[in-house]
Length: 349
Image (cartoon, rainbow, N blue to C red; front, side, top):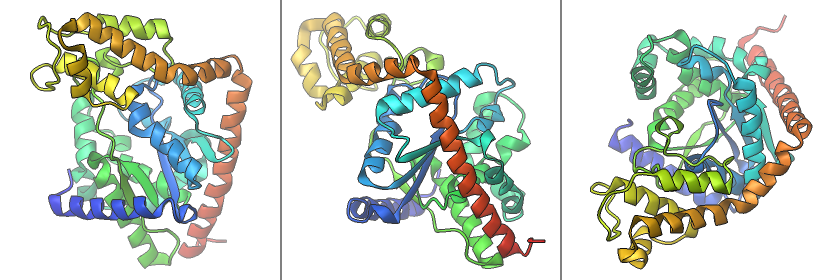
């Protein structure tokens, strides 16, 4: 985690950018992305996807990376990766990401962007890589030994941001060390070889983290997540099976009643109401009434998104075309940036 002072500085800068975005969207280039390890869920939608669409529609130059190479930072297989990538594109399109405005591309299809790893690695020390808290957390969570790819993951992320001259990256507080390292790499490169890369700032999320249906972190592995790709019936079944408690009176108490509170949080974000207000309305209706309310709230909100997604499921050729075009555009940008880097380094022969 960043220290309090650097966090306060990042918050201040993020607030300034948020105020300026609607006035001067053309000044900003945004990069964000996801690892294709499974289906995107409500936590992804409210945490990042919705915000991406807002920035895109505001006129910000937006790029969305499907980080397929990063799947193997902590996994021994790429089984199902193609299916996961295509389904991720469907989720993006269904949620409102417009390929005419937003570049959607994959790591593995853009070699020039990945080639930036070589000069960038010369600008960071082993100690700086070892200190990164996200790398430590990922290593502990995976139970794997520390691979070279996981150790250099923050540098790879710097390549993702800087190849397209990104200057804003939507992140949570836990990702701030990555942005700091990207800033360091850009600054060192510019000082050493000449100005090529912009200063990068974090656009800190103001959306509270949506817990899973059981109050824990929303995760596919916990079985507490509702995927965007689920049908209304599958959603109802998942909510019905969620664990609550034996107390009939519904109250919002995240620590004392995580299951009930997780459901209330889900209903609240889908309806725009406060979880306490919903709890008061349900009152003595118990968990049955609560689950009915949550099911209706989620299915009502996601009905148009699911309808659009169903249309894309029937047209895989279009989904592939979107990705091919995004990869083509990303390669064009990456080749131009790499040419600038070679020029700056005197490596044009």
